[in-house]
Length: 114
Length: 113
Image (tube, rainbow over all chains, first blue to last red; front, side, top):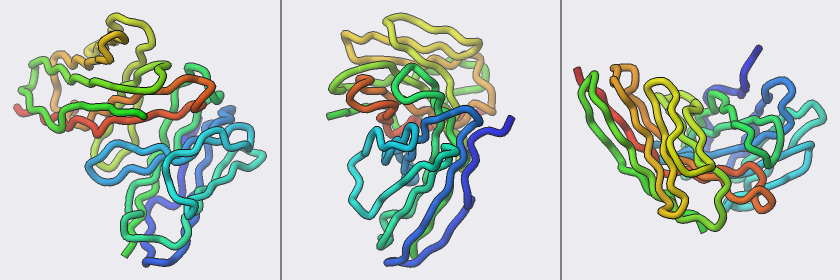
């Protein structure tokens, strides 16, 4: 069975541009969470979606938005990119929203903003 | 608020034991996770503690004391492939934050021959 998949693997953008990152959860998983990991730091929570509804939001500006589709895949959008948005963006899926379910991480999308 | 502290870096010798400590101060607690992350790769799940005590899984063990806000990950019989970052993460209360994990900065472990 395939694990969590993310696309693209790497991305280079310039300041002010917009970017869309994609995530497909493990088959059967209905919850998707997004994290930002700046080099040398731990991941920071951005969003969680469950059954297409936002269930949690981290301390990120409104330039960050996300959505979940009927097939439970998800997109993370970042507008008006800043240099500080350069990071590894991780998607994690789990069976449900708030139980003890383990989160499985995808390989991430490495975003570089020039 | 959430605050999770762990050492930045540790060095150990192949075959030895290393203990990575994690202290946390969180508004609500519903479990502590340890993840391993090799450079450039995704975090992979190692262990989960929600009750006090020791959880053992092969060469890796994890301990939790909720009253002290303290956990450790114990790596035994270190192998070169154990060189990686180890992330401590806390999940807040179920109703408040769903499945949100708050991570520490990670501890980079370097295993030397």
